[in-house]
Image (cartoon, rainbow, N blue to C red; front, side, top):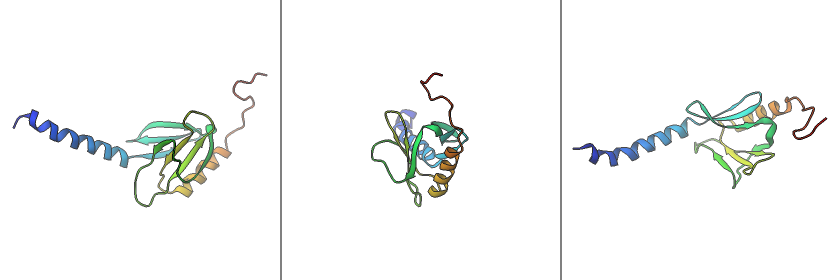
Length: 120
């Protein structure tokens, strides 16, 4: 059997395995300055903590969807202060603990002396 006959069968299987692997490797990390969405250990999306207006359980109909459809995980919606797309849906392993950690990090951010675009 020639590879030209096998390729149309194997290619969709490989693509499906890569997509499933990426979906199940979706992780969320909160640093001192940003929330990172990671796939296969690499950050693919960063949201500055200073730019988060609200974080709560729920689901936004319009917005970015970084949620893994895993059983037992609750959806969390992050609403940004600015930007064209303001809502981001994620599914951290423990939604309540994730929200509490994010809110604690946001509250611990030092206040800015000068707002962006303002001059002394």
